Length: 439
Image (cartoon, rainbow, N blue to C red; front, side, top):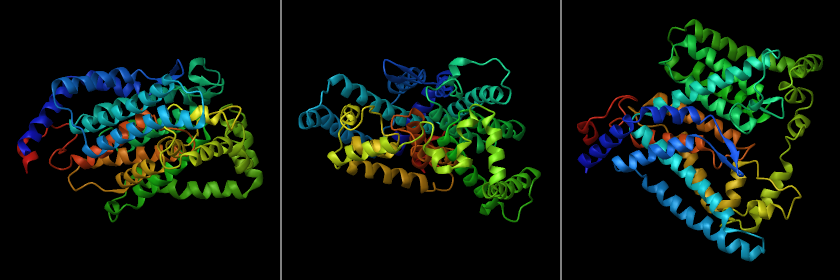
């Protein structure tokens, strides 16, 4: 059995190493989405499909048993509820095209999950994540430069509503989370020299501000607090020499909260900072957070109360089995004149999948997030994917990410870190030996 696993492992590794360009292009294009015929499409889908076909045709692609069974059960439930039960019970106009379109999105998400698992299994995650982060930094540099220097020529297609930078994405909120995922991956890539990595992290942070996304800003603050706390006070660093870089980081950790508290307590200072932010169009959406936080969260089209309320009503109709795929907007139209998605990933999947399958999935994700891999696993990859998943889960409270490509790719990678530990993942770029797998 061990020899069979080793052979399959080698075949997968060889198959993916024959396609480094495809992996690089996959990482690059994960920064792009466009709405075509009402569907969010990405150039990454082409390369993901080619990579999956390469694995299927050249080797036995690894299918994790538990997640595969779960997806099969989920498929049966959402197709049955969305295609048969809900349209007949609620008497809504429901076509098969909507059901199949939404199910195709779900199947695509599972495909990205499998892709993440097998990329890590083959030891090729570095190519994808670095290409993804590289493109995110390049796009972010454009947004940061045009925000800091308004006189520069604008690239209009990179803007949403003419003031919010959205890069190559179709939504500035999603763009801000993509930038933070890139930040999470770069943070732990210590093979990149600091003289490049630190400026890149700053650029990614500035690009989040350029997007004018309140969801992105709050997620950025949480990520910074999380990372600086762990970096400064983690056990491995105690009693060691403190480098100038770490000393600056400690100063940042101590001074930033003090500065924020001073601004929040001093009304004149808050108003002054808010007035300065109003001078920059993208930051003007964020300045109300300093004047009146609650009103700032809900203002300028950022309110989620109506969408969340509709989601809760829909959940109450079929709480255990869900309403399935392709039916959400049709049902939401009964509660609102302008039906929209839930703007919350957890509410969205609870409405479509039902409480039972949603609870199983979320508990599994939390375990995956909190569980530490066995000693010998590729720890930088674990840190990167864990923090990236944390970013996406925090952002999920403000937007619907249930069909996000990067979300499912990251979940697959994080699972693979646990599945293929010391024996199968001795180094991110090394090919595992059969005898190591057999131990």
